[in-house]
Amino acid sequence: MSARARGALLLIVVTCLWGSTFAVVKTLGQVLPAADLIFWRFLIASVALLPLVAWSRRGAGRAARVPDGWRSRSLWRDGFLLGAWLIAGYGTQTIALQSTTANRAAFFTALSVVLVPLWLVVAQRRRMPALLWGALPLAVAGLALLSWEGGTLVVGDLWALACAVTYAGFIVTLERLADRHGALPFTVTQVLSVTALALLWMLLGGAPALPPASAWAPLLYLGVAATALTTLLQTIGQRSVSAAEASLIYALEPVTATAFSFLLIGEQVGLRGALGGALVVVATVLSQRADAPHAETPAVQVE
Image (cartoon, rainbow, N blue to C red):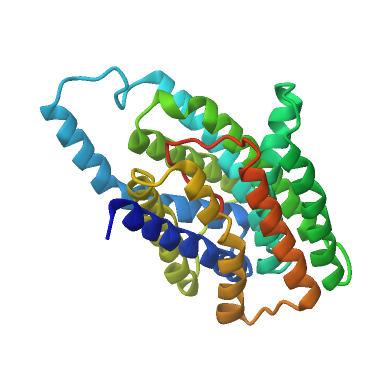
């Protein structure tokens, strides 16, 4: 198997893990507030990343000192900025899953990829690419069909749209900052920033409490497999797969989310929902071809 094929296979695994999280987060949201869920998930991910941090620092000790070390102020400043975008995305998505279905939230969240080139067109006064003109009405039609199947547009759908907007902001910001720092230090600072911000959010809501015993297994899965492990696999996979190719693989995330939502919590998608989801996926792929930005440095994905 070639390095490119191995990289693509790793990214498919990452996409499947991301897709599985919607059902898990929806289930956990019934026993944990959003702030608590995010805090414990990212605290576990931070602990899981410690061996990689120790290994990287040990390797750096043998090599020549580089300007972008762990004590770099710009590293922590940029990591905190992206962490703020991330917790906005995780927070809105977690709240969304309290009142909308996991598969609908996944397709709504996938709109972030369509919103990125639109964001850049407005912010940087770029010319609207022709493919984006086609992607936008497809995305709107897909969301209309998804909402129609549910009978009405619920508040959770609006929170999911907010997640798409905030994660689009994260992607645009990441494009600007990605090449300034190493992948692992930059990712770790983002994870730690989300942990700290989630802790502050949790404390503002009252006295913190340990999660119930039933929540620890899914929290460990989210922290270790769906955050720390996916970060590592994404880092390795995108060494041999271009960002454009990787983005096409990531477009399958809502499809895998729908499959896991059916298998794990019994959610089903009807004909209108399936057609709407397909339109969203097509719009996502088209937007990737519309000169959308793709940061080569991997970072935590909203899921």
